[in-house]
Length: 343
Ligand code: KG4
Ligand code: ZN
Image: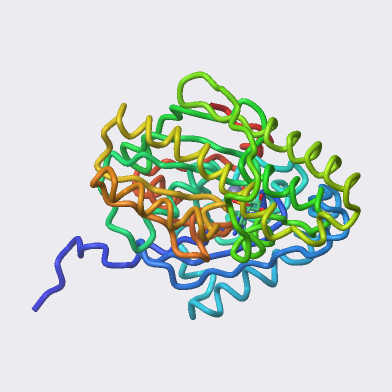
């Protein structure tokens, strides 16, 4: 039997995803929409400073990026010659950090003659919801990270509209700044989450700021915690030490109440087919439980990514990049990273 003149292209589409927008250096391999490897090197150097130091982040990315990519290829049992494209976070993020990831991606694309796909970090956080989940569209996504708090109407991975955003701080920042005020390390979210489990959320009350439409505001709650702790410490110098669990539980509860209030309103307004929670703060245990309750209340499926896809990772970048790859939507190697969102 003779072979057909144009045999169907059965080669799998294997994408290398690279993420380096803030303080996590990450690489992942995606094969026809399935994750084969997801490697993240988190930087501990920032803990002592209570926040990310951009120059130190860039240097750590430089040391970590090649080993992380090699580990991802090894874990997926492939080599660079098996790749169909490289997806890389182009922005928003720290410029020095983004330059490390994008320049490595460009070098690999030139060396292996591969197309590059530039990915928006926020769209990647939304794409995390599509990994292993058959999400229903349109989906209303609550994106809660260290830099952003947004409600996004997701018609598809390539068609999204921001319908609510924070007017000042992001929810993750509210967690991180509270942790700093109480002498906990960085990032603060996981620590506040852990301590809150042992506390009573009804112990103290913190305010919710008034905002327009579906927008958020978290600078007020942060300032109220500052004054609250200052006043209590004056009365009892051991106040934080003795009550940290209750403070964390009450503060965390108010952040979640503020988020849910806007989401509730957005669901009634947009009537989505499903809701999705994403970004680093979606790792919060109380928020995850509350999210599932919100879905039940409105009778819509409520999705949350697996833990490893919640905080910054490259699997979500590969997933977002794969959609653009399928459309032939490639990024020229002359394209520059961008620190701020273009939206
Ligand atoms: O998405 P992400 O890894 O990076 C950004 O794009 O910003 O989010 C990091 C944020 C930090 O503010 C961190 O404190 C927060 O996510 N975070 C949490 C938890 N785990 C991470 N916040 C609350 N509870 C958690 N368990
Ligand atoms: Zn992020």
